[in-house]
Length: 207
Image (cartoon, rainbow, N blue to C red; front, side):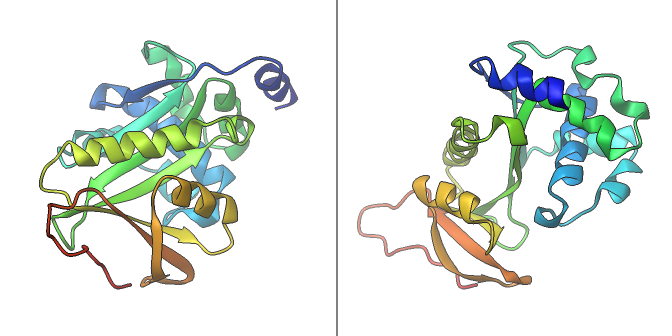
């Protein structure tokens, strides 16, 4: 890990951003499991649970036409070897080596409750790549994807109350808090209005 830290801090990051397809399922698996191992309290799942997922499960997630997964990475072009042959890894510490290669991820998916809403989920930036503008770029990419679909009116996300840095980032990206996360008393729900037609009233969502 010290070598990865030295490599990242001694040079300027030049991240590239990709919308992942099913052929990049193992790369998605790599960074998702890294995120679950580093920030387990910020996800509604666990490292152990998703470690047991089959390749088909990861591919199915990326095939969903109502969602997109963006990856921030050092690679201008993704190749199979960028999964680091991690399909056999089982220990959280093994996934730390991905930080020098892949910097973060975010998912935007249509809400199951209201088809005019999208949810921002699975947002994570590697510790050594934080405070470099990568998180903000990922959020903005998710919002751009949502705006490109005319049926979506609002983007929603949930965040832990004590995750002050993330809350400030969301607010800088135009999100506002609308109260507690209805599923988590320690969380807050944020909204970003994607569009408002002239004369429309504000699109509101109670928590």
